[in-house]
Length: 117
Image (cartoon, rainbow, N blue to C red; front, top):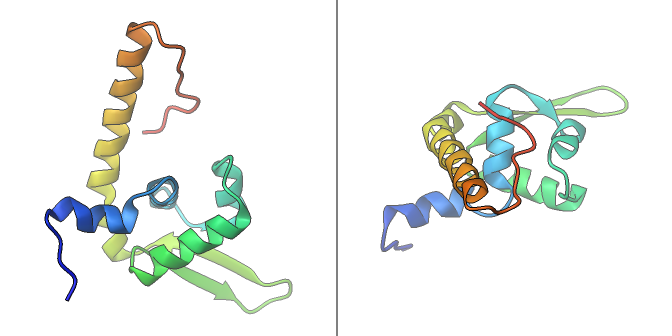
């Protein structure tokens, strides 16, 4: 039996790490192909992206539709269950923007490249 000390551990197990929350955030805005996701997340390798997508799919957060055509076309989308994480992701984005503003006010050279909403 798996045990957690705090509920946040279960949350971070699913959407924690460097890339998963970004992937969920991008898919909340609409269905995307693997190449679209990779272009939207600078610094992620295709191997890591595919691994993260598989884990999110296994956890029921996203779904995948494979079209039977040549070359193969695969699209990823947020699942009904994954939509329930939207509030958490939005809160993380809001806190992150406020954190960046605070750091800028303290003189740190940091910027938000894209103003996500």
